[in-house]
Image (cartoon, rainbow, N blue to C red; front, side, top):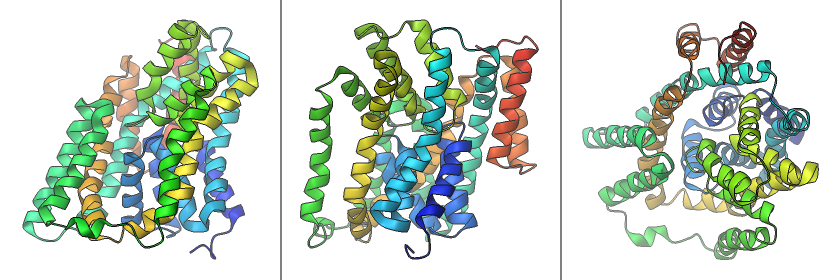
Length: 390
């Protein structure tokens, strides 16, 4: 596969997703799957689902790690670097540029309007993404008992996303372990492949070593926590950032922090890159770049050092069973995330826009990018018409 996909192609395609990826993880997952599985056939549906399950179980921003992992599958370490940087960089440049312009005061109404409009469509995108993953996952299940467990894992993931927030990862782990136990896979099957121990130890050492280095700087330590604790979606780390940036270090006021969150919503790319605005408030442009590098760095390290281990251990019966349990739970979690996303909408016009977005995606089949751009444009119109957008 690596000899068919060039680095410039990876840079172009991953960069395109980085440019149009408004709306956070559900949008990124949908765009990556459309590119790698449906349009180009670079990755099988099974591999993509397993990769998504693995990304959700690793510490760090899941959609970013999924983007890096898919690029790693195509061209190894260089593919991971090129794909990951191309995916992250457009949104990072945009959010830092907006931070320079708007952080000191209130963002213009059109910025808040675009954020509120695009944000209104994200719950519909989550349902659309999960619905498109369900058929491939269901087709792999054989037998009445296995189908019943698959449905149970799907429901468990859905309920966890609705009610548990950051603790969702525990449910994903539990569903995988239940499937391992049901199949009676022996522990001996879970041994690492020969020759893998050295690389695996490097991978396991990467997280504590990077944490130690990050602790040398208050800003780097805050950014490291943001990157490492963003289980269940980037919104999980918003309260953590606010406590550190406003309460503990005083880099920003509450109003400025809310502006930073708004900038994170109106720009493409992972929600986690909001930490770059915190870095800019703390130490200027270099602070923003440092915060982004520390927050995203461990994701590159884990995939580049551990990607081949994922490939090796994924063939083991215990690991296959684990992913067969966690995989449908992840799909359920994507669908279930639509509930808190919809409940977070603050204004009646956003609810109407959510319904319109669902129709565009599920009935008119406009596509994720077109739907998000349309929702953002309608948000700008709402702002200019005087409707509440914050």
